[in-house]
Length: 68
Image (cartoon, rainbow, N blue to C red):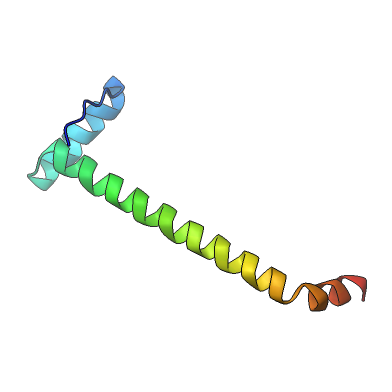
């Protein structure tokens, strides 16, 4: 899917420098960064979901510890 991205000049310059150092394109750098971000967010959501399940499962024990 095509998309236009408008970057602040400083960020564009940083990406240009990184791309040049890696001998790749800014496009490839942005794809890598977006992939890392999406994977990180997905993991964060899973961890929070598991934490909620654990909190529900052990709510009684947690309450007793809180009151101790």
